[in-house]
View 1 (cartoon, one colour):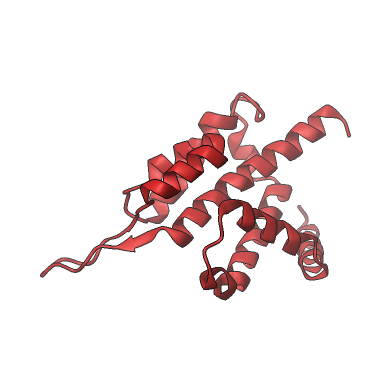
View 2 (cartoon, rainbow, N blue to C red):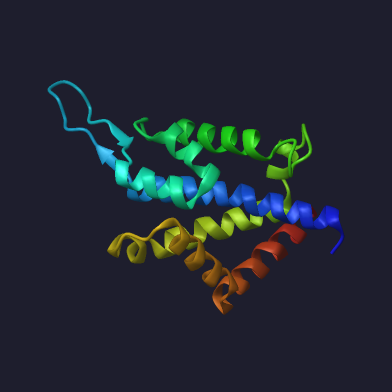
Length: 167
């Protein structure tokens, strides 16, 4: 595979990994602050010190995203900003050409992988809730599902849908 294609594939996988990591954090480390009279309960990300130590030891630069999210209110904007800031600072100008980040997010390859991940999370929610899975287990479970017959059928359908749309 030519170097440019390999670099593109690596960039897409790295971007997806950042999204998977943020989802994993939100899935397992959401906390709810107790209701106070006249105030709505606050939902936030609370990563215990022991978990932060394991993330630091096992997931390298992803610790920066965990630190950025820890203690923050769990909102779509906080999540999106943490992921985009991480990808921009870690990958743009490195494995993603400077100024090309938006174009990479818009690629069919990334969009299909992102849709596959969302389908996997929704379909696996009960299984994922039954026990804590570390990030490596999440990635492995997702990859195994993508490589399964069912995952491949969904990928094929998503690709066909994109072709039908004339993109």
